[in-house]
Length: 236
Image (cartoon, rainbow, N blue to C red; front, side, top):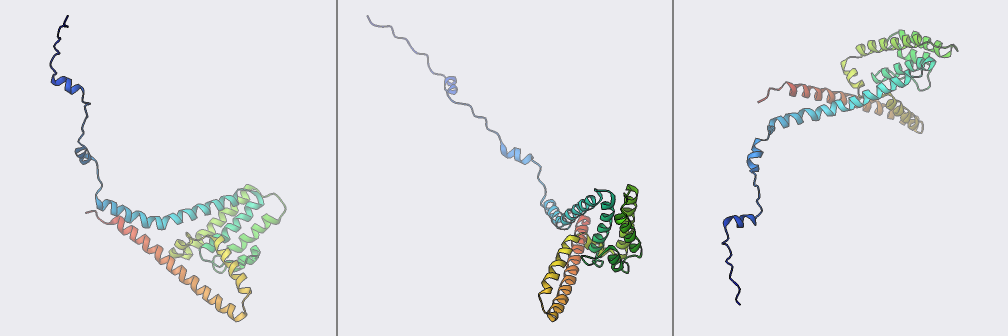
């Protein structure tokens, strides 16, 4: 017996659409146009300010932090050690300002004799009071330590004013420990040289050091001047 024929319904457009996965298309071009873009002159000005400022102020910041740490370390122990640390801080800060650096094994009074003509006569009295606090054998009170450090600050303020702006600027890039190390290296090297050669080498070293200081000072001043001018430059 023949089977009845079943007619299939015709395919519609909706069936075809169900077989295709819909894809959402976004207009990225219009979206990109809405983003904020910095003008080229702003980027150039920022780079022109940041680069020289980093060259000038980053070493100054690092050395300043090292000096603050040095001062805190010398104050921290208290007593006679903090009193002696006040004198050590004075000698180092004066050396960084360009004042004479006492001999490595000089006593405080000997160092004061070298420093007093170039700084202030009160340095000698400060050295005597520091020796009294360190070698007296009695406990040193916090008030005595604070008074010594306060006097050191006063001497440094007066010495910085007398040194002038240029030497104060250069002192921010100096660390006394590096200068002492250089002094020891030069002293060790010159001991192995004949007397005549030693004097010539010392003259050459002093001239090179003076030239390096002048160049460093001029570079720092010009960079700071350039940063100031760029900050005041009107925007186009």
